[in-house]
Length: 535
Image (cartoon, rainbow, N blue to C red):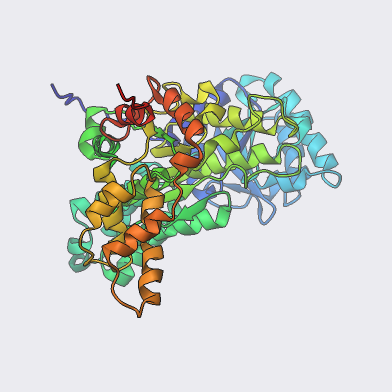
């Protein structure tokens, strides 16, 4: 049964504008709107003010007070912010004859910073205290439009903070359609197909309206059509600008480049369907992500890179250790900034590598001043409440160090156990490694993978190929043979031997707690630990 009911949802900006309208009608005197998109947000503010029965005037230090059509009105205050705030106070007085007005003041945060801005700050605070009691017909409100989230402590009890969202798919689609509509008729016809339109919109989600329009225009000028890859490159620039995330180049080949892990790969293929237009219309929820726990070197990081390639989305690595700072509160601020960038980017894969190390100290006594506990709280809140399209892949080697609240349902869609590769998986890994190093004509490598590499991790299997190449090169530069692979394998002491007790504990944890990424992974693990008796 298919849900065919189509409901036109409001954009995120429209929803926030409705909140602004309600705040104005409830006589909130001071709104602190955080955004880098003045022009786009001002249009919504004007509409929200009109819906609440207000007119709107603008102020900035460059031109002073202007009407919404840009006309300067010097009688209402000049470029000095104190003069304008004084005018607002006078127009709310009992003897004045004034209309209801919302005053949008651009970049006012620069003029209320202490100690120089102490006077203007006091004026604004006095207004915030007085304006709620002004008669309805003379109601005034101040909107501080700024990219800064740093609110002076004196205003925190008066200001309502609104972080304006970036344009969503509907707004980006309107921007793209407007760019194409403005083209000459002969260019407009081939500028977009339905498939390229959807891809371009998905690629632009996370950019500002101006950034998206600029990308669309540049692609049209260079290619005479909108290229989704050109738009995606703009996202890389956004990531490098904010410096809270690392943009990782995914591996080629997608999920086919990963040997084995068939259960996990099948699950990922089914989850990728949630991003299709048909899934959106059906109402299918966006996947949240997966936690991959298991033995080191068995493909957890590789699968994260392969997902990004298979889904054709950016791969972002979140290193919570690198976001830590020696200044109090800055580590948490960096983490929250990273989350905002992820939400802004839109559809992507977020890779949390070795998450147990980042969370070390969160659940036990630590000397980091509570930074780990705060980081854990921030991660848990974000993973539970986020609404974006980011797919989170977290990898962990030491599952015993993970807090239990991180692994429960709701944080991740599924917890997977990645064990040592099976015989067939080792063959696939060795074949991929030989192909990577250009050794395509080695006969008999299957037997090496099954027999000589028994109980090897995937990384250990792949590592014997360069060792075999060194041996063959030293022997006159001949081609690599199966004997070289066998020789390299005999010199490896696998981790399954060096850390047998630890691996057994990990396998015991996985039973009943995680789904096996490979077929019969847990059963295989149990059998390798069993002692064979002569009876």
